[in-house]
Image (cartoon, rainbow, N blue to C red; front, side):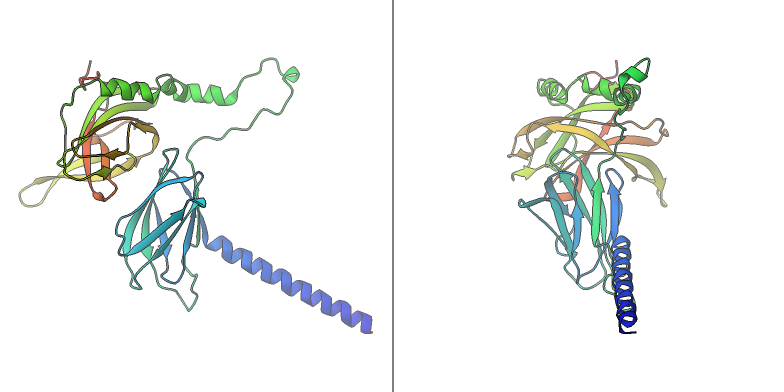
Length: 314
């Protein structure tokens, strides 16, 4: 009788421990999210909790739209992690841009939310896993003697997408060619941007550009971005306005220097997936911004078709 009682007690304890573990695992799954590069996402934060953002590679820069509302930090000791939380207890909103050492960008809209039903973690993103955008392939596992012809699947698909042809012209060559060109058609005030040559490689466009610091203070550039925007007329006086429609993922970029002293010039190149089609009132824009004023970027239009190093269509 005593032995049966002990067995029943142990079974009850094991059941309770298992149920608790399942509950904890379920709660962890609810508060964890996976975000992919090039897809802006909204994160829900709480003033009483810290949200951990895990990157696929070391962090290069972290920029908060309004640092008086949200705090985002990272440490060289933990280069793959960014910690974010609201500073104020009121419900508020801002944005966060994280760039990595390999040129990847992850863009978030931060929202401060209040707890629901007394649960401090309800509706809050505690863990965010960032993943690079791209195509994943299964490595070959069969002996080549079993098939008549052995093909590298990754190379075949990459060739079809035009990825390999884009790399046939390294970005550093584009930067060197742009550096040899005189400055022309610069747009902006303190941060002036000019677009140079546009090359087409499969489904991608490769664009060279120059940036000039016309202001009196040193600036530090954030990674370049590419946007597709449309032009509309609204209001009583039919004023023309640009509305951002889509942010295009940047595959790679290179720039001669991220830090610009007054009157200094830097040159760069960026490659991105070109939209297959666009409307007549839509325009591609290269967006360049100072890390201290990301809300005031300079936008320079990009030709939808290839151009010469002078920015002219052949």
